[in-house]
Image 1: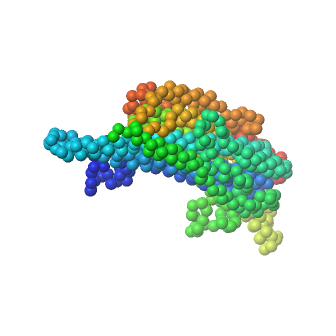
Image 2 (image 1 turned 90 degrees about the vertical axis):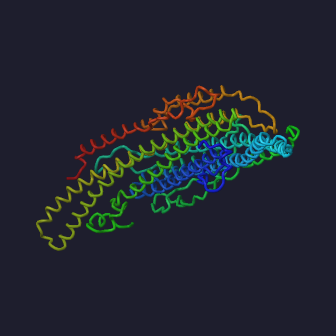
Image 3 (image 1 turned 180 degrees about the vertical axis):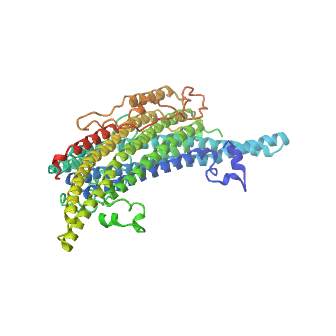
Amino acid sequence: SSTSSHTHTGRRGFHFSSLRGTVQPELSKKLYRLIKSENNLISAHETAAKERVSIATQLSEWGEQTGDEAISDISDKVGVVLSELGEQEDNYAHALDDSRGTLKTIRNTEKSVQPSRDGKAKIADEIAKLKSKEPESTRLVVLEQELVRAEAENLVAEAQLTNITRQKLKEAYQAEFLATIERAEKQTMLARHGLRLLQLLDDTPVVPGDVRPQYQHAGQARQILNDAEDDLREWRPETGANVGDNATDVGGSTSSNATPVQSPRVNNGGGYSGSEGNGGGVSRIAGGGGQGLGQQVQGTTTASTTNAAPGVVV
Amino acid sequence: SSTSSHTHTGRRGFHFSSLRGTVQPELSKKLYRLIKSENNLISAHETAAKERVSIATQLSEWGEQTGDEAISDISDKVGVVLSELGEQEDNYAHALDDSRGTLKTIRNTEKSVQPSRDGKAKIADEIAKLKSKEPESTRLVVLEQELVRAEAENLVAEAQLTNITRQKLKEAYQAEFLATIERAEKQTMLARHGLRLLQLLDDTPVVPGDVRPQYQHAGQARQILNDAEDDLREWRPETGANVGDNATDVGGSTSSNATPVQSPRVNNGGGYSGSEGNGGGVSRIAGGGGQGLGQQVQGTTTASTTNAAPGVVV
């Protein structure tokens, strides 16, 4: 809508601006909506993660039902890889959620700066009206003192806004990009091991009545899962100069290092793999961390604006 | 459910197996459900892609509204990167959809093999009953001839099932893993360029009343987007020996090479960037391709089973 912020906040009583979204001051309206969209994005990745893990278990169980030892083993272990892909997707969703929290800091600051702008504009308005109606009014002196105070207050508010906006914008999207890289690098490793597993499945066509040669790759397949587990454990975020600041430790990166790669098959009824029946125990808690830098930045900002009185015209 | 497949297909009329999901023959039930879950997975990634692109535009428009030239330029260009992340997410969803189609081939074969198993079992059943009731019946000879024919037919069906299952399972998940790698590699490149963009945003706190130095990185920011565009254009899938077969060309990989990286800001009202006002024209069509191998494999299978009469006991 093109309603000016001043008109908007000045209205009272029954009006259309009580509909959700429009109750936000004009200044924070766009970010308010963006943050809602981020929420939808996070939900979508969470759903993808959940479906991925469900598919992993289903694939494993389907493979078992085929009664084909090779398919059963490979589908179970491909299921393990898929399940871990899902876990990484879920970690990604958690990291996006942290970043969303950072954007809220900008939105809250925008929200709090709006009354300061409005207050200043209101006093200037009053002075202009009074000057044309009662140019000799003694109230003009009081109002002009009020205006100087409002301008000083607004100058601080605007400095806070630009400082918070730049710092938090940078922080939020650095975190999103780092989480994107983490998910990508981990999922690439997993997918490569998944491809190795599929190579162990002999798909040479047989003629009716022929018996396939005995499946002999269970050991190799187990080794591939071990390799995948090692790769995940050894993964570290880059700490290159091009990343900037010390925001490299995105939430969720450390928690995934401790979880072993396990079979997604809950009912491990087959007799060919006795050592992998501990599936279904996925209980990784991602998120947390990554907010320390934000706290520090905010602290710095507050301090610098408080000590900045010399710069304010009073 | 634990209902045996024989009982299940033998029933007629009003029964509980008319509820969705349970109408599938037992043999294809698990894969039927897995394919449904794959559909949910695809929808989730499509939603994530859509939200990502929407957030990109919103971020750009929010940045413009701040009136801060640096934030406006960086947010617009970070928006471009986010929008392209969303496009890659959408390409991934399309590739998963192709893979889902491949899994359907297995399910359809499972479905068609069920009657063959049931038919064989039914005749064997009849013979057993007749032998105990009328061991001298002349119908026994006819039934035993029928059984041999049913067994031959089933032998072919089972060979088709194992061939299709192994080939298509391999093909479907190779495609998913390759698509995962493609999305990961492209999104990693994009995220790194996104981090470079954020480095151009000076977030040194200012004191109230201070004016920030003039933003001078528009050229560098433009160059980063050009680099991102070049990287995407030059990306190629690996063709290493470890990938196997010739399934390396996953749908969507070629189509994205032609699209330039453009501004997501539809109303480019700002005066600081005149050359990027052609946003909103994202019209990439992903998918297609990747099925040629499947056709060929299926053809091979049919031929080999048709010529396989010598192996069948008649």
